[in-house]
Amino acid sequence: MSKRASFYGLIGVGIFFTLYSTFNVNYEGHSVRKTEPTFPIPQQSEQKSPRWEDKPQITTVERGIDPVSKTIEQIMSEQPELISNAMEDYQYPNGKYNISASKLEDLVMEQNGRPVRSLIVTTWRSGSTFLGDILNAHPANYYHYEPLLAFDIVQVRGPPLAAKALKWVKDLLNCDYQDLDEYVNYGRDRPWAFIHNPYLWKQCEAHRDVCYNPKFHSSLCRLFPFQSMKLVRLRLRIAQELLADEKLAIRMVLLVRDPRGILQSRKHRDFCPPSPDCSDPALTCADLVSDYKVAVELLKKYPTRFKVIRYEDLSLDPYKHAEELYKFYGLFFHPETKKFLDTHTKASKGGVSSTFRDSAAAPFHWKTELEFGEVEEIQESCATAMKYWGYVPAMNATHQKEFNPVTSYVLEL
Ligand SMILES: *[C@@H]1O[C@H](CO)[C@@H](O)[C@H](O)[C@H]1NC(C)=O
Ligand SMILES: *[C@@H]1O[C@H](CO)[C@@H](O)[C@H](O)[C@H]1NC(C)=O
Image (tube, rainbow, N blue to C red; front, side):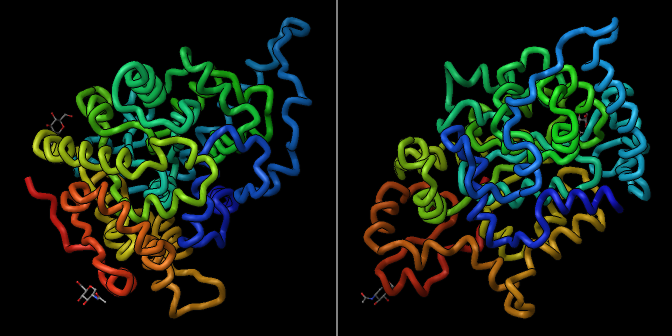
């Protein structure tokens, strides 16, 4: 209970669904924002540790004891109880969803088990913070939050970045951090890199001397039965290689959003406009087209391990879709997840009955926020992407404000 309570503390009780679109980007963004002024998640962490660099890492061996190793050992000794408490009353798949695990150790790498690995592939401002947190509401989940932050505001579409990106992702999914110094060090002075993983962040706050130690990351990661990851920089053409790795046995969801919603939301993020990969409608929609073509192939090739969802559909009926997604990933729709949805899709500033409407409106702000001229410009670059993904063009300014931009849509194979 207290673990869950602290989890909710971390992600911020009272941060409503609609606010995701406001906050999201601070983390999906990048290093430019070194001193994050409106850093929303745990305020207390800012106060407690404003200047990590003031406290040097303990790396010296004193009196024959390596204090870092000692700290790591101590932290690891505390985890199993924490994890097994979180897993109390858990309904193991036990053959359901094509996962044989029937007890905790079947899922724990440290005990030669195989964790359930759940991936989200998407792009900036497509609702992935919301979906990522739905997965992270699952008990004993180790959240690899956008591991490619250090790549800056670029899309990984092929060489030379693809090989490095895939290596990082695979190493993380294998909890193998020995070649990941750059990944780990990126988290220095950038709390948003690790803060979304409450199990990791709790230790980082308490023991700064181990927070950037790859061995520590490996040891902790290897204890967790569930591993989730969201990727906003890796296009599907590259990410599909992760599905081919049978040993990893990942399950992947491609999260898609209306490009008009994406681009409206990105407009207000200062990390975005300088990068064409982020701000150019033509590039964004070429990615949506490419993702579509790959998705059609992957649905045939991996019908049980690959799935597509549109952000708009998820937002309009979050309970139904969250439950379906959990089944797809092979996760137990735990009461904690239901509680997460109760607090993050319904709550509104004091309102009760109108709240669901608020959350359902989140993906559609572009209809009132964009000028028709801007919408037209996006639609010119995005006709194919919109046709593929089932988004209706707006015909004029009046139409834009009134119409339903989303078709009831099934991906055609
Ligand atoms: C179930 O898993 C096995 C091994 O992981 C795999 O070979 C098989 O294709 C899967 N079956 C389905 C229906 O996903
Ligand atoms: C706007 O577009 C809608 C839908 O095509 C059409 O019915 C309507 O007449 C148009 N309004 C104007 C002012 O052109």
